[in-house]
Length: 146
Image (cartoon, rainbow, N blue to C red):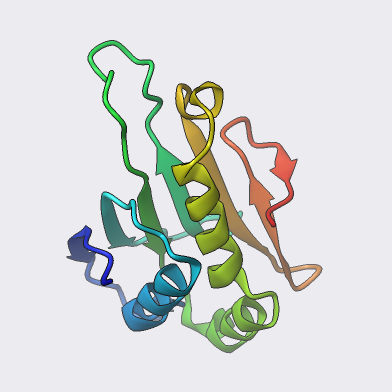
């Protein structure tokens, strides 16, 4: 089964920036995890981001006024400096970030109403000093991802 979602395209990059994740690789990871709920994917610029955010997963809480129906998450891939491309892409692969993010999305599909009723957000940031990824929640707290 092919996961269907709205693809908002890629923002045009300025010189010296690139996207760290190919859409085909993202689709493979989502399919391998069995993700069936994803509203949209977008590739956006993120220039001069001191946190080096690479991915953002967001689910609008279902308890908000007017949102009594089941919602689907949104995934954004952010641009990175091309000078860090090999390092970040290597770490994405080594730490199996796409698989881990996909498992989190799959978990979210069957999460309880308590979880789904409030906004859920995971921001995947590259820690340049320690050459690894950190995950932050909506409160900017570092969290673990499976």
